[in-house]
Amino acid sequence: MQDLVQSLRAECDRVGGEAHAQAVGILDSSGQVVVEWGDDEYYAVSTQLDIIHSSMAAEGGLDDLLEVGEYSHVESYGDRPSFYLVAVAKRLIVAVVYSDSGDLSHVRQAARAAADRLALLFAPAASGALN
Image: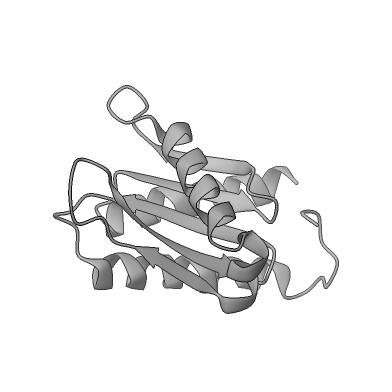
C-alpha cells in the first residue's frame, strides 16, 4: 500500500509540473482525497478539491464521471479556478485545478498521461487495494 501511495504522490507532482497546475489531487471513487499536490499556503488545495466534489455531486455524481471517463469545467469569470477530471480504471480520479491562464489541452494531456500510467498499477490485480 505504501508503494501505491508513493506512486500516486509522484503522479501528482508530475502532473502539477507538466500542467502548470495550481493543485492536483487524486480522489477515490467516493470523492475522498487520497493524495494532493499544491502549495496550501498560497492555494487551499483541499478546499478546491472539496468544491470539485460538490460540483460533481450536483451534476450527477462521481459514478457518472467514472463511467464517462473525463469532465472539464472552464471558469470564464471571477477568481474561481477551472478544473479537469479524468478517471483511472474506474477506481480513482485525477483532479487538476488550473487558472484561467492555463491551457486546457495541455492540462488534459498531462492528466490523461497520468491516468494511463496509474491504470497500469491496477492492471495486474482486478481487485486491488482501493476498492
